[in-house]
Amino acid sequence: MDGVQPKLIIHGGAGGHLQSHEGEEKVRKILHSVVEEVYDSLLSGVKAREAVIQGCQLLEDEPIFNAGTGSVLQSDGQVRMSASFMDGERQRFSGIINVCRVKNPIQIADFLQDQEDRVLSDYGAAELLRQINIPSYDPLIDIRLKEWMQDRTAEFHKAMAGVVAEEELALPDETRRGTIGVVVLDRYGKIAVGTSTGGKGLERIGRVSDSAMPAGNYANKQAGVSCTGIGEDILDECLAAKIVIRVTDGLSLKDSMLRSMQECRDRQRDLGAIAIDQTGAIAWGKTSEVILAAYHNGEVIGDTIDWNNEELVGYC
Ligand code: ASP
Image (cartoon, rainbow, N blue to C red; front, side):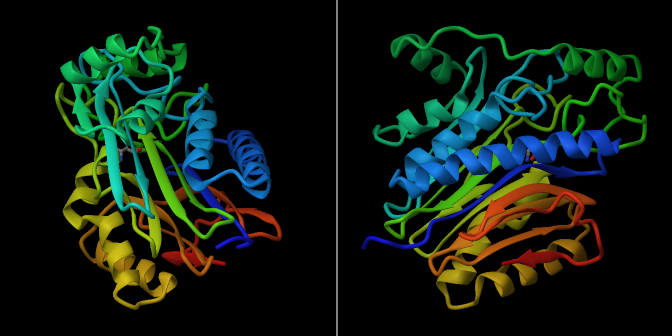
C-alpha cells in the first residue's frame, strides 16, 4: 500500500504543571521542531521504523527531557536508561533495560529488533554495547545532578523527579516526571512506536520501568501507543497493550483511549498516553495534570501543552 497520509504524535512526558510559561514555550518549540523534522522524513517516504528511531533520538538528545542526555538519576546517583521499540506490522517488541553510559538507548532497542534475544537488561546491555562498539557517553547534566542532591538532602521524599529539566528546581511536594515517546503511521500504512526514559528518578537500583515493556510501549497493525507517567501505574493497567487490543477488537481509538483513561482515573493512576490507529486517527489521554505532546495530523502541527482541562482524552 502506498500513498497513505502519514501521521505522527510524540510526547515529552506527563506529570505536574511546568513551573513557568517560558518552560512551556521552550518545550513547545522543541516538540514542534522534532515533529516538523520527523514529518518531513515521513513525507519523503521514510518508513515508520526509521521515523520512530529518528524522533526518539532527537528527543533523547534534548537535555530538557528525561531520556538519553538529561536523564534523571536513580537513588544511588547513577543514570540508568530504558528504551523500547515496537514494529506494529511485525508485532515485534525489543528493548533495553537500565543501560548506562550510552547516548541513544533507542538505537540499542532498534538493533535488538532483529536479534534472537530481543530484551536485554543491565549486565547484558553493557556487554552488548561493548560487542557492537557503541562509544561510552555520559548523559548526566548539571540540573539533574542538582535535583538529585536537593532530594538526597530531603531523603528522597519525592515520588519522582522533574518532568523536564528546568533551571528552577521543583517545589518539595511537587511530583512531576518525564520520558519521551513517538508513534508513527507512515506512507505505507505501517505503524511503529518507541519510548525512552531515564526512569522515575530517585528509584531503587534494579527498578524496571514500564517504558521497556509492552505495558508502556505497544503496537500491532491496528494501532500503536506510547505511555508516560508512574511506571507502576502503567504496568498495573497494562495500558499501551490494553488500548491497542481494544482497537483491535473493534472499539474506535478515541473510545479505547477514553475507556482506558476512565478506568485509570477511577483507580487514581497518574499517567498519560499517545496513540495512532491504522485509519490515521490520533489520540492522547492523561490522568496527570499535563501531558507534553505534539502531533502532525497531515494538515497542521498541534500540541497538548496548554491542555490541562478536566477532559481525559483529546483526538484529531
Ligand atoms: N514511565 C516512566 C517510568 O516509570 C517515567 C515517565 O514516564 O516519566 O519509569
